[in-house]
Length: 198
Length: 198
DNA sequence: AGTATTTCTTATCCTACATCAATGCGAAAG
DNA sequence: CTTTCGCATTGATGTAGGATAAGAAATACT
Image 1 (cartoon, rainbow over the protein chains, first blue to last red):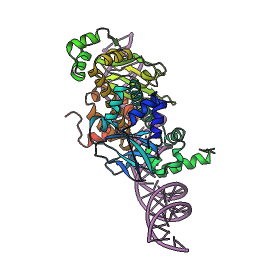
Image 2 (image 1 turned 60 degrees about the vertical axis):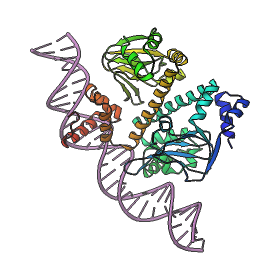
Image 3 (image 1 turned 90 degrees about the horizontal axis):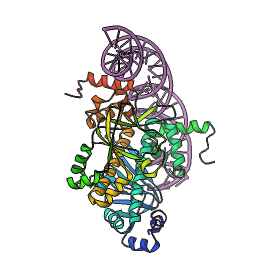
Image 4 (image 1 turned 135 degrees about the horizontal axis):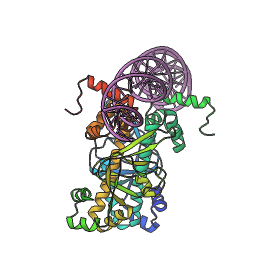
C-alpha cells in the first residue's frame, strides 16, 4: 500500500490526484519485520525508502565496531543513502527496520521520470534536497557546540514521538553519547522537574 | 576577473568555451580585504561566492559567543549558505575573507537561467548539491566517532594546503576543539615522528 | 627599527563524558 | 512459572579535552 506516499505527494508536491495515480502506478511497496535490513553497508543503495508505516534507522559502524545512528525514519520520512544512490558507490551505512515497517521503493528512474514530466515534482525534489542539507547543517552545529543535555533536549523537541518509540540506547547513539550518559542526563533533568510529556 | 570560474565550468560542467562566454557575460566579481565580511549572520544570503583567489571561511556564533567554523573556501570552492539562499531566510552564518579574496557573485537567477538553457549545467549543479551532502554526512560521522587527533589527521589529509595558510585556532574551531587542545594534539603527533609535510 | 597585537605553546587544574562492572526489571521464550 | 535476554540504571574510576593563566613567538602597526 502506498496511500501515505500519495497523500504526501499531493500535499507537498502540488500534483493532482490524477497525476499521482499515473505516476505511482508502477511503484512497489514492501514490508519488513523488526530487525530486518533494507540495506547493508557496502552495498549500493538502489532506493529511497518512503516510510508508509513503522520506523527505520540508518547507521554506520566505525572501526571499533561502534554503531552511530545517522537518521530515524518514522512515517512520512525518506530514508536512503543519497551519496550511494546518486554516485552508485558502496554505501557507508546500513538501514534497518526498528519496528515492522512498510516502505515505498523509490528508485532513481522514478525520480528522473517524474521530474521530466512534472516540473512541480522536480521542484519538490529539489526542495527535499535543500531541506536535507539544512538538517545536516543543523546537526553539525549541535555536535560542534552543544552539550549532551542540550542535544537531548533538542532531540525530544524535534522528535517527541520518537522519544517514546525508540529504545534509549538508540537515542544515545544518535546523540553521540553512551546509553549510561543519556541515563544520567535524564536523571538530572528529572531532578529539576523536567517533564518531557506533560 | 572570473577566469578561474570559467575554467571550472569548462572542466566540471562540460560546457563549451562559447557557451561559457555567453553565460558568464553578466557575472560580477568582487574583491574583499582580509577581515571583510561577505555575509553577516542574520542577513539573507543572496549569493554563492566562487573563490577565484584567496580564502573564505563561513562560521556560526553560538549563545556563549563562541565561533564554529563551518567551511573553508580556498580557490575554486563555493561558499554560501544554501538554506538561506534557497529559502530566503536569515542566515545562521557569517562569511569572512581570511585573506585578500576575489570572488564571483552567483545568484539564484543565474543558476536557474543557466540550468534552463544548458542541461549540462543543471546536472553539474545537482552534482554539486549531492557532493555537498556527502561532505556534510562525512563530517557528522567524524564528529560522532573520531577523537580530536583523528579529526585533525583527516583535516590535513583533506586540506593539506590549508594547514599552512590558516591560523591554527581556525582549524581548531573547524574541528570543534580549543586551540590549546590542537596544540597538544600536534605535540603528540610530532613526538611520534609525524611530519605533516614530508 | 621598536612596540603592540595576535597567535602558539605549556602547565595546572577541572569537568563532561566514557568505561567497566553490578544490579534491577520487564518482556519474551522455554 | 521461571529463565533468559535486552534494556535501563547506578556507582566507581578513568580520560580526553576544556578553562584558565602565563610566557614565547610570530605579525602587524607606526
